[in-house]
Image (cartoon, rainbow, N blue to C red):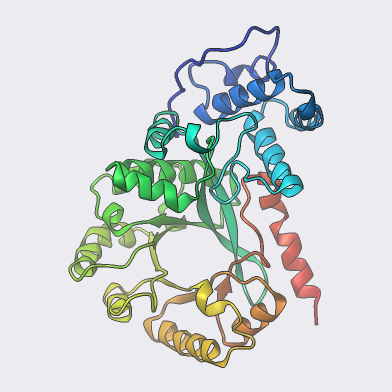
Length: 359
């Protein structure tokens, strides 16, 4: 369901490649577009004869050996390490991406052209960030974040802006939803998955079918609104999402305080989850005004019967401050960074045990 195989790509002469060494499912017509394209990128890097890249190529070979048959994971880890070592933007790291030897600057293809390739080949993956219950540290859900595999240095916001300019924003958003829903079965079954969606996508007639046809149970799905609402949208969203919500789908909003009518719209929607934005969380342990906002929103969420989640918790002090306000759950780099690697997902609750062991 996630993607169709990408078109064949001209290859340099060789005896073997990462794709040749992969398990049989990688090479047939049912192969993952992400995996095949990652194998091609790896092949091009390893075929580059520049002596300055010998060390990087050797590290890439080590990662391929550590992940046999999974070139997309090896490539992601390799590029993330390049960013750490050199400061270069790396593929699948918070939106920006870098491929050794790829054209840069004015020689790069336009973003609109590359977004067409992303849609065609489904060159995107999902990183998952844990959402923790603050009283116990236990992971209760994840937020799905899109990472693009490309030869540019563009943020996720720039990708979506380009898609809007090219009038393919709906296609891109549905592609990201497909990718996130395909990752969800690899999570423990008790965790919910928060999917970022625009109001327009929530109103799209294809959304119910996409959710119903996925292997993820509807009561594990949270639709998180990412944009301010227009005056007529709350009522329309209530009507459109009512059948899904009656079957367990939850609604979240992260728009509190971001535009004048946000509080009124939240009241109209009656979301199951309200998110406290990082702009309010940053420095909440020392800034009395932010603390008062958090206190007010805690009461507001309680009045609506909604769970309050603090986003962007980056220090132990911020964690203590939001927990002291009675905030139910939180996410942020201090509680767990986004990752595309299942082994990271499995280790999340080790951190929960560390939190519980503290005084």
